[in-house]
Image 1: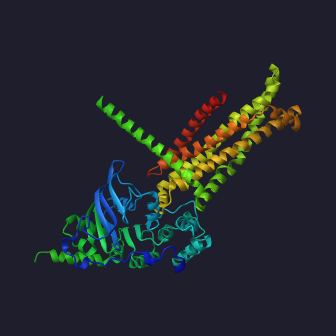
Image 2: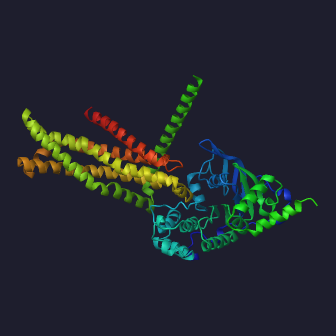
Image 3: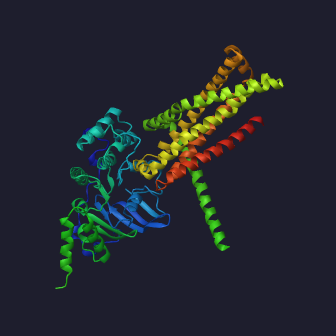
Length: 303
Length: 261
């Protein structure tokens, strides 16, 4: 199986060491990192939909090799930020750099090459409804690896489907598959080309416990291999178990960004409000982040 | 007064931006059309499906319509023209009506009604479901993968359906003239080929080519104009079909005028 992989894992960048434990408390930023290689670099990005300002001059760096969770109340611009960062929408103003290329200026061939190194999982899957699940998974391979024979492509797809236990879904159309199944297939499609940069919009929504575990384990494996992950999530446990960095958004702006342990200790009242609200709304109890918040609250209480 | 001028200005700016977008869309389709020779298997599969849907699935409707029309033209011709001593003009009228005029335009109308709405609706639904963004995220150009195969597929289908329309239209008129006037196939073919000119066939083919491309371009354009809401899909589908009908009639008039210049 691994010999047939279109791109070997060793081509991925090694994961950067996590530094949050020894960083000073003021390392929490409004998005822009002082140094280090960025997988995604947004500068003064603004986006408007029919008069509604979804993003308000956002500047943000997503470090290479990091796993970043974007959190915030509904409608605060998380998905818009993710779509801009992945180059799926062109911002009204500002610039977007992905894996070292400026998306506004990069030639089409460069963009296509970049796409083969990126994966995007949409909130509702966005599977191509007029194709079978098999064709949904084959299309990225057919597009970026035409040198592989049809049978080799099919073998790759079947192996991945088998790993996730969805082989029986391959001949079906997306409409015949449950929401959770579609989400899992969308994840498989996005990771078919072994991306270096993976965008996930609510990756565990619609998934049952077993599928969530499968997805999280696969994500952890990819992260360990150096894949940069950016995810929008409402589930604090997803953030705590997988992510090492947190971006907190509100009203189209980035309020705080940095390693999880530092953002959760942010002195910004709104950041703390948002995190507490997200934690209280989440369906899954998350000891890790709550512990961090509680410990910090206790520490900040007057003697 | 100032408010009115502001509104007019805003409207003009919106119309200008919309026109620019349409021109940009057209240029991008032309560019991707030129690159289609290097298209990979998935795009060719879309093309095959489009020809199947637009061409093959429309055969029944076109056959019934063209045979009925051929029958009507010959019945009217055979009953009216001899009264004026112009019976010999029956076959000329048959060629003008079936081959040169109604064949291409009626075929185009049927395709616009069936495939135009289908294309606009399908693409609009894909926008709302974020399937178009999924293509972009995968590194697939939606114009190249979705629009170009549809333009080629619909154009090829309209040209072929027009030939099919002619065959069945003329067959319908033969059947009626055989049943009513006892005309045999040899006589019918001789009379018809005497009035049929190469220009009639070439003119009809050119019309079909232009009509097919217009239908696919307009329908795809309106389908991709859908932004976020599913309520926009029927609106854009209606706009696509209305615009197709209007443009088909106008272009048909212009091409007919050109033919006689």
